[in-house]
Length: 110
Length: 113
Image (spheres, rainbow over the protein chains, first blue to last red):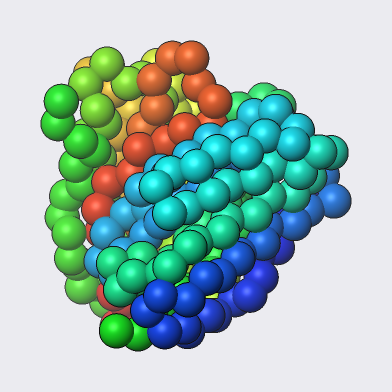
């Protein structure tokens, strides 16, 4: 079983603060995705990272893929209430398999 | 381009009954995957269909089954429902040139009483 552990599991911060969410595994993935899910909806793809050490920025969100392609992080700068949601990482391995992380539930308080 | 659609959005069933959920993928997508999401277990993979064939299967009992039609629409069936089957069932589709990027529908919230 290729387990993706996310930390923290829950995070509650004030608007304007910065935060980092981690996604760790003992397995190597050929790519890794981050999704955000809002209540009552399906996850929405935010980004895909493919190369070890790769960094991608999406406005205030910065995603990094570990050098060994076993872990990833999501950093949010100046969090806003609209960032509230469940953040999920997902790793792709061979044979079209996609494994989802345990999730981080973020609440940004106005 | 229309997104992934799932019907129904909400469903209430009684233990022992069976249920069929439907998913229409994004036009042109031939792969459809199904997931079960619960607060305790997170998002768990059920199975994936590609061109009407089951390509991958998760670790769920045989009560959970699916199929895909020639137009790529997919159905998932759960027989002999149990209380523990209460969950959000998500369908996701993806196209060619896959890098793990899936597009999810809004889900079907199933409650078993």
